[in-house]
Image (cartoon, rainbow, N blue to C red; front, side):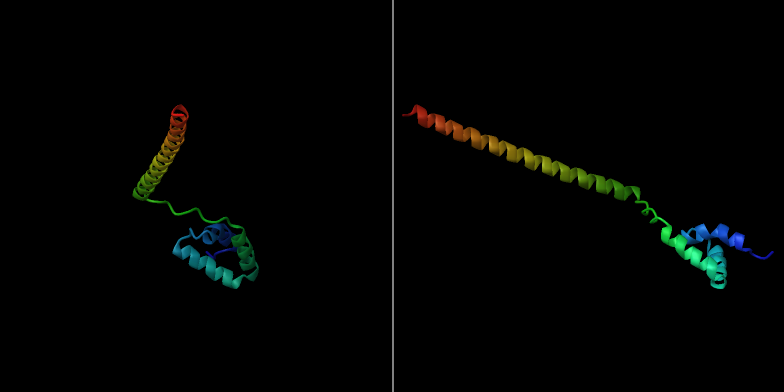
Length: 105
């Protein structure tokens, strides 16, 4: 049985998304070399394809990234709490010193 253009059209989406088997890729590539019109169509389709989804991250890497993000957030919260406490002590201390100076007059 000869491979028809319709068969190649069926395989073309898999070929363009690089999901076809090695044999199918070779078959489509050979056919595209001999059919300029279909090769042009394939090029236009390839330009319209969305970016492939990102490669899945392994679970260990996800846990590590989560733990690192959690550590960074905790550090920021501690730093912010320390800055607020310092500011309150500074303002409170200044007010206390001012009150003591007013009383001592």
